[in-house]
Image (cartoon, rainbow, N blue to C red):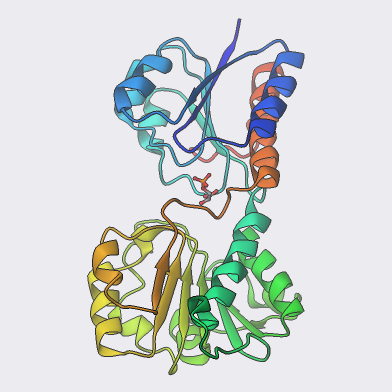
Length: 306
Ligand code: 3PG
């Protein structure tokens, strides 16, 4: 029987696992579960006889592909697939997919949860500021960026976006002002929300010079990836500029150093953006459906390692 492994170091909500089982078992596929694993050896053992794997931010590298002799497909239940070695997947003849858009709303809602927390001085009792009328810059106008723009309208923010790949007309069609560069976005906006993927081009791209373009009192929100931040440079800048604040749901490697910036930095202990029951159900069940369609119909929609 075709076997699907759900391998999640950070587990889905139970309702999502139930949904994955329902969809898979209805199509005659078996589901096995590896949650909250702490050692890579547990993952290597679990993949030995499976045909498919559903993951979140779990790292799937060459060693995992070597250990998974029957593997045909990996679906990252979520958007970013920088945790999967795509070249190794292709070399092992394994299809890799993501489930774009399925967890975007959850991430976008957390952006505003973190933003309100930051501009109200982390609820320390001192008078904070409001989001209404503030200039919000969305860096990368993909599924999450669009959800952020939608919610920002409810806050009556002045919304700007930059995306190297999305035409300005598509951004403007949403009532969002398209700017022509990343630099211009940072020069213009008091709040920046990052939604770029971690790629060779974006790694460490949020650096001293770029962030220093922000106006006085700005807030940087990162629910994208920690790899896009040049941590030593951001830390140095925040030490020099006592007006800047940084909130993130991806704990930096230099978390202890950032914590010295009292009242200007916050990180959740785990990546929390997509951690809602709804996002887990949407992304998990989409992953299961894509796996069923792959085995039953040969469907490779959403394949990312072509
Ligand atoms: C994504 O890329 O989909 C998000 O960053 C969510 O990641 P997670 O599934 O590990 O929470």
